[in-house]
Amino acid sequence: MSDEGISDRVKRFIATYISSVAQLETLLLLHTNVNQSWSAADIARELRIETAGAEAQLAALVASGLAVRLSDAEAERDRRTPDDAGARYRYNPSKPELEADTVAVAQAYLVRRVTVVGLIFAKPPDKVRAFSEAFRFRQDPRKDNPNG
Amino acid sequence: MGEIVYILCALTSIMCAVLLGRAFYRTRASILLWSTLCFCLLAVNNILLYLDLVVFPPPSTVDLRLPRGLVYLAALGLLVFGLIWDSD
Amino acid sequence: MPTVSTFWFSFLSGAVCVLCLVAALLFVRFYLRTKDRLFVLFAVAFAILGLNNVLFMLTVNRFTAEPEQPGHPLVYVPRLVAFGLILFAVIDKNRSRTPPGGPG
Image (cartoon, rainbow over the protein chains, first blue to last red):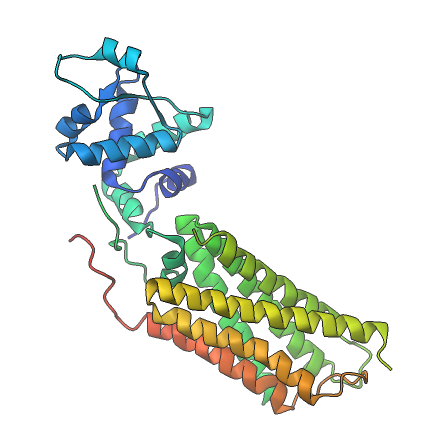
């Protein structure tokens, strides 16, 4: 699968920060609505995935320095319905370059969705396997990769 | 016979370096960077070996043992570093 | 009499030997983790490269300044075998084994 038309910055961002399609879509949801906070349930509803999966994606984004978890007080304030419990998260890049990267990835996902998804799948789950898979002459983008 | 062997080894090393380098370009996994450099240097080592023993045979004043040894050491040093440091 | 330069050659040779064996050990560890045949072949290849130096040390008089002869089998046979194994590992990797099933 050719990955032309995707800038190196986007490739690097995906390789470093994005491990699944669900994670990318979670990030883009947070990014589109910068001032809005999301709970795992909100994400799950929007992306039609399991709440536990959404929770994992949000935690991963926090760990990567792309999102931040709101304090209980702020979360309480943002709650939309009384029974919407759980932590809330907001897009918050820890470095200015990450904002530019996210914008670039969002754009790339918009115009070249299939290629971007291919890039996500092309990333092997661990480095040791990456060494071994490197020796394939023809790379298969559909690797053993958990998708969201 | 030895001459062919060193050239073959150099070509194999180059092939490995290319495959690993291409994979590094795709995935940016640092273990691949170190291994790419390792096989590049192994290729250099084999070329130096060829030069040292075939192009400038022993009676010659050209003695490439020190550069050969240093390049070989660097190659394996990078490989071992990469395999330990970047294997999760 | 061992000269200073002979010491450096011995040092480099010994250092390289140990690093080869360590690399082989690391490849064994990777094989245990992934069960990927490539790592076994690489482990054996690098072990042979390491043992090449040992073999050389045991059989060649290092206290002379004589560089090895290119035609001497001790120099090129282990190298041939080692790189042959690496080459075989790469070819083996590419012999249409389906990658562990991903989503369709």
